[in-house]
Length: 161
Ligand code: SF4
Image (tube, rainbow, N blue to C red):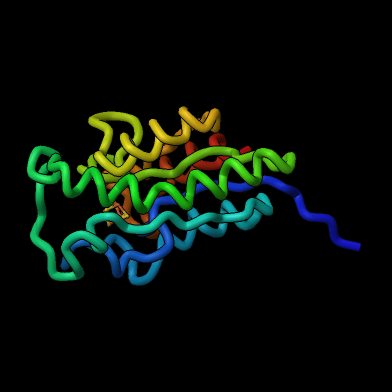
């Protein structure tokens, strides 16, 4: 009988779906296949976060800075999108699962987790912290390009192992 590993990762939406990014900014035809394959090889469950910018402004949105996104309306939307994710993470944790971490997107005004933290991640991580779900994070570097990201792949392997 197969037994589930009970380990999960939260992943920024566009890691799995580059169709959501700003037009002509995609870095893969579909998703970041090599990163996804690495997660699957470790038998990690993948929880795909919603894309806050797509939800707020649609597929044809212009590029915006963090300051331009830093409005009460956008923060409210980000909290609304984050809430069900926090509930899921809490429930998994309560049931003995391990939420191994969060994969963000470096330099994104919404989804960077490490540098100049994006607004969605600010809200999500604050809500996770309130819910006592502590997450280590990894950001896909800004210069990552599917098929040409060997250094990032090695770092990602260390992150998920
Ligand atoms: S808002 Fe986040 S999930 Fe959406 S395209 Fe930008 S980095 Fe990806």
